[in-house]
Image 1 (cartoon, rainbow over the protein chains, first blue to last red):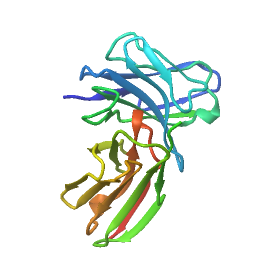
Image 2 (cartoon, chains in turn green, cyan):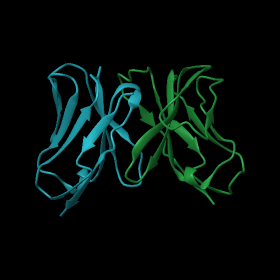
Image 3 (tube, each protein chain N blue to C red):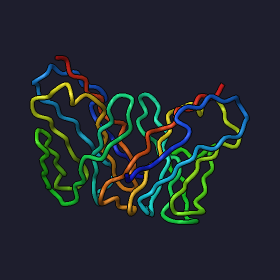
Image 4 (tube, one colour):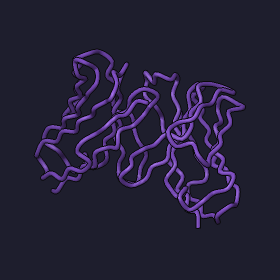
Length: 114
Length: 106
């Protein structure tokens, strides 16, 4: 089944403890992106990647890192999480930047930083 | 950078009433996409519009792309409880509008 898989689905962590949220797609998509969703603010783009080793900042990149060493994986790294990074995170992928066939989203990761 | 604004933020309707959400961009869009997110779920792709003035239909849903390719709308005829969720438009590089949350009262 074609899908984007995020792990974990839920995570509670403490301030300053490094964490990684994984994202993997099995559709050979070139384009991948990370979003955070907060009430009243919609979906805000954190980082995106147009292909292996090609990443760029979105609207809210502060406090986050990403890497794209393989086409299928696009992990989101929080080096030193803070409470304001408590949010619902989504990973998405598409065949191309233009997304002519739509973007496929993962099921989301709900992160709480205490 | 590009901004995509969506209105209204919330819409409460009685089942059977129509619903419309509007999306406006600060810049001309090469294309626009629409997504639906059910409560507790993730965004799901509905449709993409590419051409100026384009109109597409999916059953009770009608999508329009403005002539200047800076605005778009989604209209749902005779809403049903299954239409509940948040509807998002998205422009270049999947920059999302804030979404319109639709609730439907049976």
